[in-house]
Length: 348
Image (cartoon, rainbow, N blue to C red; front, side, top):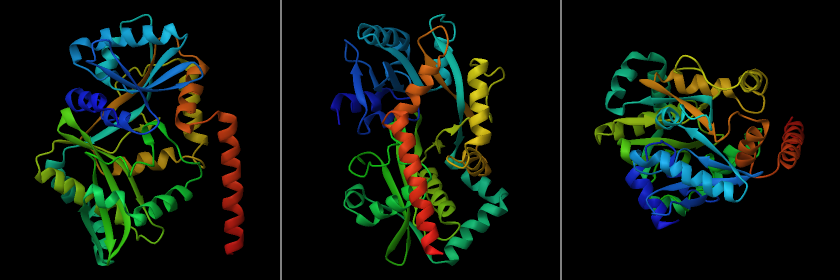
């Protein structure tokens, strides 16, 4: 981990995913004055950046220009993926940039979690159900988590249960050796860990980002809700004022009127939302996060330094997440689907 990148993230991060530029596999670009950092991955001659530049708000446009000039010197374009409203408002007047909404991000104030709990009988039932099954949520220290084979086994089960191969970039699953400022809550049944919730700091927002949670196949219903309840209660008692569970891709909840983005891209997103659920459950993810009644939502954007969005930008974003050319990723999807089908057939 780069000490300078960590220092800048802790001092200036506003975007909830800022800390994730420290994840393995993400490159770091530093401004000439070493007062700004951008985390990015190069894909098909496009630098896909994880959010906006991390720096003082007063110099963000200047830093973006410097980063884009550096990319241009290598004949590369720039796409800021998962940019927030603040960066989008700074860039919106630029004719050299295009903006597209990619989803929404719900937020909770954990100091007011009790009012959500009291108003939601279904949530209380799920939490009580897990407790009746003997589930106990606790926080464990990072050094212990880094050495836990139980947690790695749960992560493998969780990844194996998905239709897609593991994704990377800002949702890198293999970070147990990179916990540092992260906090980890686990659900235990007796002495056995059956689920975990990994929380990443949002340093300048007095908040936490629920970055990753997974449960074993044996975990009863309500385990996830109990973990969320325990973490929310803990952070609320500590005076934390913001928690987010991350991006809800392609969601239009909480977005400002006049969703930006070209017609072809909005049409593609609508098509994906209604047809891709067998591979990635867009609707289920949106339902789960919003059923917990967030206090508010923010729009999330992709911003390119071009007069318009191009299909190449979408392919570059997809490449950043898959970690490989799309043809190879598609083959991995087919292989995993066949393996899951054969395994299911043998169990019958």
